[in-house]
Amino acid sequence: MTRPGRVIVVGDVITDVVAVLSGPLAVGSDAAAEISIGGGGQAANTAAWVAAQRVDVTLVGAVGADDAGRDRVAELARAGVDCAVERVEDAPTGTVIVVATDGERTMVSQRGANLRLSAAHVERALAAVPDAGHLHLSAYTLLDAESRGAGLRALAAARERGLTTSVDAASAAPLRRVGAAAFLSWVRDVDLLLVNADEATVLAGGLDPAAQGRALSATARRVVVKRGAAGAVWVDRGAAVWVAPARRVAVADVTGAGDAFAAGLLTAWLAGATPTVALNRATDLGALAVSTIGARPRP
Image 1 (cartoon, helix red, strand yellow):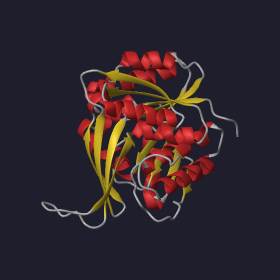
Image 2 (tube, helix red, strand yellow):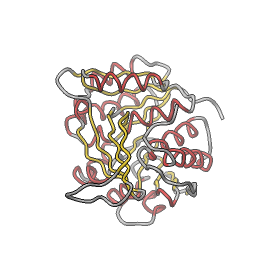
Image 3 (tube, helix red, strand yellow):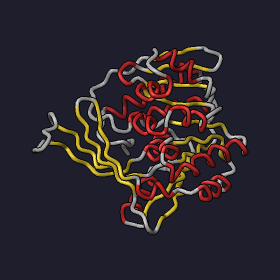
């Protein structure tokens, strides 16, 4: 395998407030939890995991002109991420409250300054990194009308520059709101589309994972269906299918597991790995992520 070129990641930078419950959520009352505050956001997490694989990476995003924004950028810089992050004066840095229990997590989101990411900023950021070889887009940018122009411009600009492209479908609920047809039109002909089981069902219906991948390969050249503890499936446009089991580890917190998976998959694939090797690397990093609390690799 060869060393990948620079990866550009476009999307959200977030403050995560993570509550890992020690028991069931007591609605209307109190529940004990281990609570942590730190960096999050699908794009920012993926960029941090890419950097941890010793691959050059630039994050394109937006934060508020506040202490949280400064802290989020500083964390990423310490992790080895080059930050092309816009500071927005009249919007707060995005925040997500994550409630994690029993191998699941529920998120309550305020996207804040992420909604203000502009197509012009994306264009400038891409022009400033001529060594880039790949662009990875978090679909949260596409799923909100206010930031959609930035996401669409990111994909178009990457194609114009000859970069390969990938999209993480992000989240099932907002996918339902925008509709499968619209989303698939926005990501048509990307080189790689990543979806989890719920997202695959929204976009391709209640089929088995390989059939979902085959259906979605009409839109993307390669599709990876992430199935959590059931592993992952890779399908390419020629209908070839590869399957990888998940690693069995004790689950502490699933926050950021999909972002770690994406980073492992991308860095291996871009280095020339076969689908089997790329899936195995992805599941290795996903297992590492769920075994610790928080969305980012440990220093």
